[in-house]
Amino acid sequence: MAAKKKPAKKRASKKSSAKGRSSVESTLRAKAAQSGISYSTLKKVHTRGRAAYLSSGSRNVPMEAWAMGRVKSFIRGSRKHDTDLRKGGGSGKKTKKA
Image 1 (cartoon, rainbow, N blue to C red):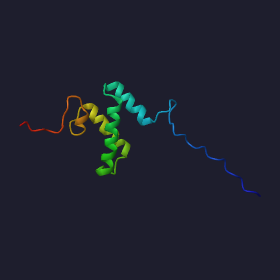
Image 2 (image 1 turned 180 degrees about the horizontal axis):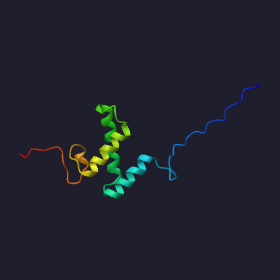
Image 3 (image 1 turned 120 degrees about the vertical axis):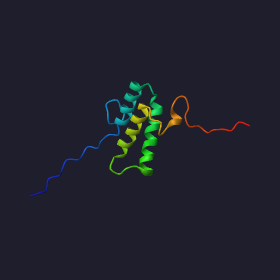
Image 4 (image 1 turned 90 degrees about the vertical axis):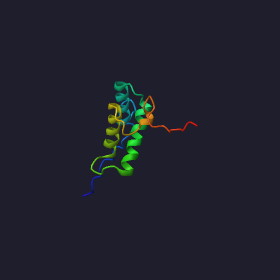
């Protein structure tokens, strides 16, 4: 008896949604529309959240959850991080006036 061949697996495409956007991108775009904060700003916050996870994040939480939590915190108005991305300034370099 000859062994049966298994059907070839279909490879997942890089585009995960119908419009060609990743779930993170579509989530960030939806949050940008709801909050009034630009998509590019939220994307920067998300990227910084991923970097923060890699530098000292909890290993009990997935990286994407850590980064999205940081985005949600930013939208709510937390001043613990990413203050340079907020309108109205925040923590810029202070210069001494002579």
